Image 1 (cartoon, rainbow, N blue to C red):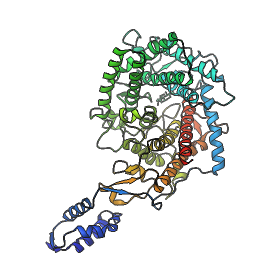
Image 2 (cartoon, protein in one colour):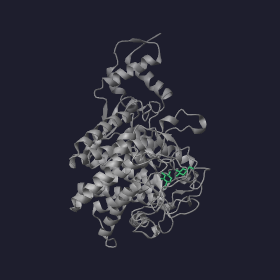
Image 3 (cartoon, helix red, strand yellow):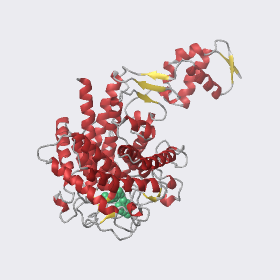
Image 4 (tube, rainbow, N blue to C red):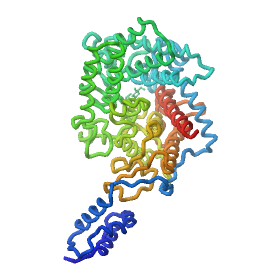
Length: 570
Ligand code: NOJ
Ligand code: NOJ
């Protein structure tokens, strides 16, 4: 037993902390404060934990548990946007944007040249007919990529080489095609039998059912489709296009409503995941379904469909509770990130997954409209959610070592985006199974997440608030005072110098994912599904519609945040 005074305790703290927790020496910065709070009289200290409790009390009594950083630029870590000169990179961005948009259009039946002899409005996943054969229409890929065309028109940045009315016709074709597919009885079930047919993931390019065995049903398709149809209705409003009421009522009653009804009926039923491999309930499926219900709730009111409005609201409330609650397992307290497949976390070793999956990030992107403030409250797991950001941080940390081609990007002291794949345990090589590879959609989704995060921050003028829940993400960009790990949060006020500097870092970081893509597309900007984990050569289905759509969407968000920043700085 020893009798110590405040000064000795404080010295002990410094020594103990640098021994026990290297780096904790930031506390020394506060030593004067701590010292003044420690007892002046001699007190008995027996164990290290007693010392800690003095430290905690002292820190607590220092006032609000918050450190504000607004002008310190020395905490910023270097980030590198691109490995080629800026001007060349900017040129590439413009070029790739155009190629990506056309990459989607080329694969639309009735519009694009890769989709000859394909029904009007059918979007082929890829023109590849063998090794692998992706010459089919997938409900998911089509819904996500037609949205590219809808957003393109919505942004109103039409270039002269594109005829706007032809694009609108292509979307109309897509809508009619949905109506046809919905009513094709198939191996997932019959339309008349509780809309079971809607769980079918993939169809022939002439609209016939696909009859081979497959991972079915997949229950994300109807919700994703409903989201695109809802966006199309918004687009018609924005463009002031008055469809005759018969057509509008057809779209609402015959196309949108069956898909939304499907979500209300089956959100709690097992199904295969978006990667078509595993049966259960999945974060991607649930969150995109939730957003679809939300959109349905708005539209049911508009179409004065009150009974259906009530059904949608009920399903929405239940699904939301499920997603945020304990039962889903999406937020497992053992992990800091989202769990895509909770039923596989503790599964036998040969099928076990650690829950990290780019699907969680794609889900956050597809289910949040950052321009709609309602989504911040109504849809959990937005682009600034700590678990979403942790999912990215942990995926990057895993894949930077998993895929040897990332080695060149591991530069000590420099923060850089990496080539990302679907999930760590992936073994699909684009044709069969051996080893998984990086994917274009995964890598571009990482970039899109960061642009969108920054857009959200600026749009709502939010401070950056960093605490133990999201600290690992922000530590990629900032040397944070170490004591913030012990319950103290850091606030970087909106518009401050540090805020602006961090914003630049985030854009550079997002750009660095696009830089990875730049390295691996071919000379014409064409993209397949994957690129080889060792040598970076493209592999898997060529000209994959979803790769183009996803890169286009990432570039769209890059433009949107840069435009927003430009208006603020004017
Ligand atoms: C084809 C699916 O589309 C893909 O996602 C999956 O990984 C493989 N089949 C597994 O064999
Ligand atoms: C395999 C992917 O895993 C799946 O999500 C996609 O729908 C198909 N490829 C078609 O692109």
